[in-house]
Image (cartoon, rainbow, N blue to C red; front, side, top):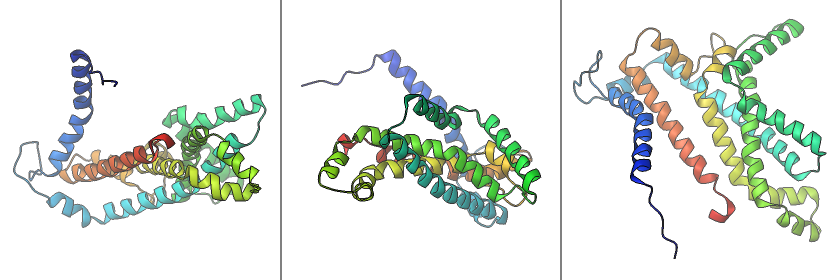
Amino acid sequence: MIRSQRLPPLLSAIAIATIVFLYLPLAAVAAMSVNAARFGVAWKGLSLRWYAQLARNDLVVHAAANTLILAVVSTAVSTVLGTLLAIGLERFPWPRWMRRLIDAVVYMPVVTPDIVFAVGMLLAFEAARQALGGLRLGMGTMIVAHVTFQISFVALVVGSRLATLGRSVEEAARDLYAGSWHSLRRVTLPLITPGIVAGAMLAFTLSLDDFVISFFTSGPSSVTLPLYIYGSLRRGITPDIHALSTIVFLVTVALVLGLQVLARSPRED
């Protein structure tokens, strides 16, 4: 019987201090969102009126609708393309030099700083506008920009699932005279469904919280919640901003927890 080892007291203290350092500001924002005081940080009693005020704010409702449309559409497109890319990379033979080149291209949006990626997308849209004409920044350009970086994350998650599963089950299906399409539809896709869903949830979370890329590629009528929060902070911090930030944080936490559950390896299922 293997006994679990406890961390040394010093490492445990450092781990606890790190967690407190990371989440204490978020807890403070959540506490201020239920504070009855409109100005200052003095506690004036428990109140949920700031959450009710958000529901009556047309600008917040419009920004929330834009955020959901952007996240849902970009996630749907990037999930399909990212899954196909992962299957193509993991299940088809590639020359070693070409595979390394493709892997570098896939990893590029993941490791590139957001500000550099955002400027690059803005320059690309400006070049397209000059070449084609009539292109304006708005929801369409935001969706294209989000899909561009989301594909890599979906492909990496689905690709790791495929690498973990191996090819033995698919080879067994081929031995039983299953064709390529039948094997993909009845064997491969059901086995990698948790990875596909996990990749989609990760892409949705990234789109939901994105600010830099959305800021550079958005138009006047395509304001999202992160952009609305940024614009409101420039005019001063109010309790309804605390409430809105808390809602966005809780939704993100729920998605990340779901991502961890769905991204379990087959041995844990």
